[in-house]
Length: 631
Image 1 (cartoon, rainbow, N blue to C red):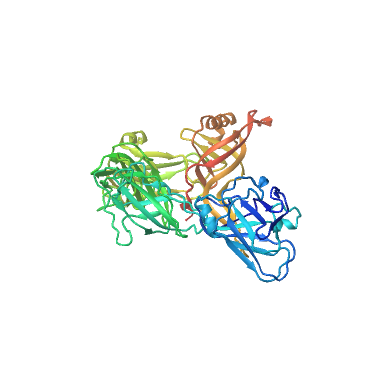
Image 2: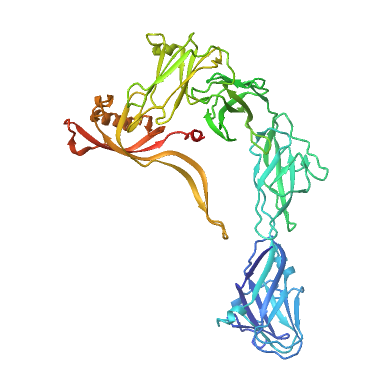
């Protein structure tokens, strides 16, 4: 229930003693039987067409009065021809007969409240009847005075005439109807939704009424739900109450119009909403054919995913692949094709998507047809299908014969992986710690073949300071080799390295401040509980790195590269925004670098007479940090 009060009003008194005199700005309103009347009109403090629950006109007496019975009546004014500042006894308006009286049988003093129940009057006012305020009169032969709106004393301002109104507005017509726009829904009895507003009174919406028609005029609606109880701004046409059954939208796609009105807790109905149109067409059937439901196991690291859509024409698709954590019930996105407008029904993800051997994956396929469909609760506009599958749980080809690993050029952080096969596979999959790091086609395998018949591949970014386990798996005929041998090595690395596909940069020194930061905020609950830190996201490594670019004196291969060469390579990474891997300690992560600086040092030359460069940069890990590496 909404409550409003106002003291904004005009008032005046008239007297038969001076029939042409106006008392517009008097501080008192005076009434006396048949000779003195007062009039008051308030600015309307509520919306038109409100439902008036209660209304009170409050006057306060001025002066002290004896124990005689006194009766005061307020009546609705008739049509008033004169402004209040021109109102006199001679031109005073007539009054209607529906007066409201208050009688006091005991004495009363100044400031005594006289409360008149004017609910019926104010309701007529709300409904649009002509209303010019009230006439105040008495049948008593002794004058009664009330404080007016022109009372000037600060203490007396609280005793001004007051209008108090309790109202309940009818709800606004519902808006934002859905489904709408003559769009297509995917079920014949959809859930209808809208937005609604009720500003005063009992604003709970408790019921709705829906109509359907073949045209927007609704002269003779083809369906009327009648009053239906609801607890939110929606109505499910498939579960109406009171035995009402919606026949369903026609399946031929022809348009139907619908509109809705709502009822609030005060029992007030809104006006009808503007009508909107909708159509219904049954959806087709989407089937995921690969991976097959009967054998959801994949050995191919770049398998084709295929599907069929019958009973409809495909307009667009989206294919997503998720990987499950090795030990936790957590899923991470491995690949997302994005929404593609195409009729293709087969998609092959790129290399590296299925990178974790012996792991559970999930594919999610979303397809849109050529109809302009709109999602409704329980019936999406798109077709969606999901399926879980295992990667590399089967094998049907000969394994790798032998494998060995070594760090060929200390202290470069490279590992040579050498293996032999008994046959030439279609592809060769190289894994480090269960993660695919290379996928070599048969045509490219010749470039790795050595004079002794073995194959040699160089891992340019292993994880230093801890064991790296390598496995080489042949892949032929859609199956992976099983029982492959593995080999391990702990790379020994000094300094920090930035490694690209074509070159590397060595940074001497140990100055760095790398952190694994979070996206978080601190919540302080009400009460005695301490603050709670809420983490909404985990970031990878980031922070500053500093050191020097020098020709080393380590009696190693590093001595062969000048400081100027290191500097030039670093600037190439900055200039071309090349992707690089940062290797240091036991960290090996893909990064983006920025804010690079490499000026010559104050002592411009080392003992060999060559320039030395101070180096500083910031780095940010690319992609998703491998939290699974921590167990």
